[in-house]
Picture 1 (cartoon, rainbow, N blue to C red):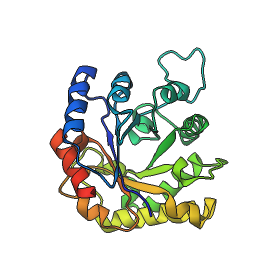
Picture 2 (tube, rainbow, N blue to C red; picture 1 turned 135 degrees about the vertical axis):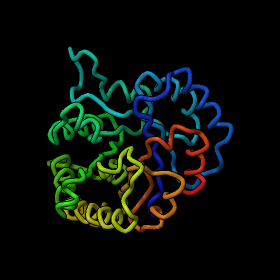
Picture 3 (cartoon, one colour; picture 1 turned 45 degrees about the vertical axis):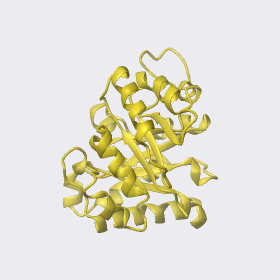
Picture 4 (tube, rainbow, N blue to C red; picture 1 turned 120 degrees about the horizontal axis):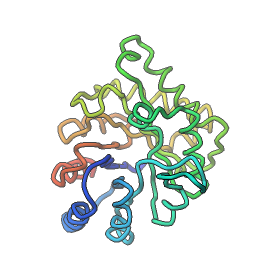
Length: 250
């Protein structure tokens, strides 16, 4: 029912020149896929992603977007600009944005709305830090982020949203949630979406797991019924490790 999505978040890695070589090799080696693949490089690389992938099965998008539609906002990138580049997805609410740039739930919501206005699917990141999990409050904390980002947001089509559960304590640490822990959270997220948008909608929304995803743990995570793919950081930078993830997803 839900097509798996493997989205590579490159963060602040690779120059445009390096990316062009990587894209060329990916196109050469990419096997036929039943799952969907998306790459999310830094802003300067996006024109090269369009050049490489606009007529292929590989989607691409950005790691962030401005909450403003247009105007005197130096350094910002609008959803309209991303749409013009052909971006299908864009991340909002990543824990690194929340931590290093003090992004609030309200700001995440505004960014999500700007993307929806331009027909770009937001990949909405939610997840708890270690101290919250240790207090046994991971589920209410994460669902609180989800509710705040979607407050008053009218969604009719499940293709308008992807949710990525990223336990903050697992991002870039080599640790990852046990498959059953990930399933518990994904199930809670789907239940919350069902209450907000209806059971049919929630049954079709893809919920990704992120947090030190690698070829060694991906199959066990995907075996969980509510895990619909991965938002992948470090393992998406190496061509062989990324291809390994795609082969696992099928």
